[in-house]
Image: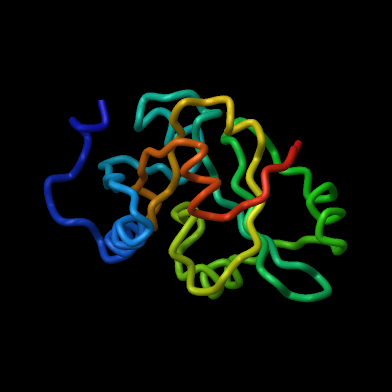
Length: 164
């Protein structure tokens, strides 16, 4: 399904950046840009033909006290329990669009799990580990790439937690 939808032109600059980061990390994964949006988990699942739970959505939060960036990579079917994550980092979380772009270099709806402007502390939803393959955003609201949960943990150096 995805091969039929993939654009034939070269990747956009943001998607190309993610593709290059994946290559540097030693992964031969292919970033694809689609005609339709993958901004939401449901959109992405429809576009690539998988379950919503297989979408690895990247949500960036800011620690209220320290202002540090926190990346939570959640299963597309789950809602992040911000209080639980806040307890793990010992401060409350907040979200702000401008902060996301500043800390990652990417727009909301296209934030990939890697290739950010700054180092982010990363937490990964344990529910993603049940799948053989998952899909993550690749720099734009139309770009994605397929990977395994173990690849995700390795390339992000993320801590696997229950986020619900």
